Length: 280
Ligand SMILES: C[S@@+](CC[C@H](N)C(=O)[O-])C[C@H]1O[C@@H](n2cnc3c(N)ncnc32)[C@H](O)[C@@H]1O
Image 1 (tube, rainbow, N blue to C red):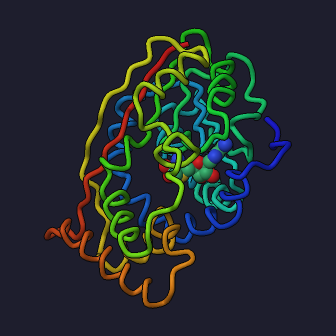
Image 2 (image 1 turned 180 degrees about the vertical axis):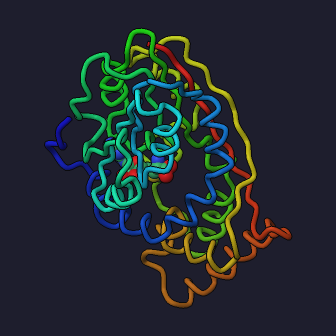
């Protein structure tokens, strides 16, 4: 596997602003994902000795769980385009013999032919500039009997911790003049089931199955959640050019939305995902 040969917007984003913000907020985002991860790991059902590719592996949490499950006869390769995020994964997995991390773009990485029993991802496959090229590349590296099992977000409107908070921000600063393309690279680019199925079928996969998986996710205290949303994601984008006064108004509007998810366990926000399975 080699490194990428051309820098796309996504590569730049995840190596610069996006990567440093992800690392800064990694405890919060990874804690949020725990209930979703459990569902994904059940769906993967990794067995001893299997060879696994974890695409957009981030800080390596899923890769490490899978490395335990496949045991010393198996192996997990995590690929990620972001050097700052991968360095977290490398530190965490130091000393684990059956895991390897590669700094590569999954679109162009030399993944090897028919090498993996499992190709998986937890929220790492929605950022490709050309998803068909990326999924075709993965398809080539899957063994004939192998399985693709990944998790991605459904639509932003079904994920109010991002959708409703972004709307609250836009109500103050004004929505972008041009409506963003929902299929452009970003967290919700694979939310539309027909679009997602088309991408996978065009990339060569068969028996594509999408299971809607809904979980309540812990977002911690209001202050922590607010701190995260004001720095990363659609609210942060909306306030990039905002005045100090507008930012204050957005802070209180987003707090109000988040407060509606308060519980005796802190903020518990609904999350809506697809667990996608497909075969070669
Ligand atoms: C939302 S994070 C998820 C990280 C990790 N899977 C997790 O669940 O904690 C998305 C990850 O995908 C990576 N990524 C984005 N585009 C990629 C690409 N083209 N190839 C490989 N990784 C990519 C990012 O660098 C980032 O680490």
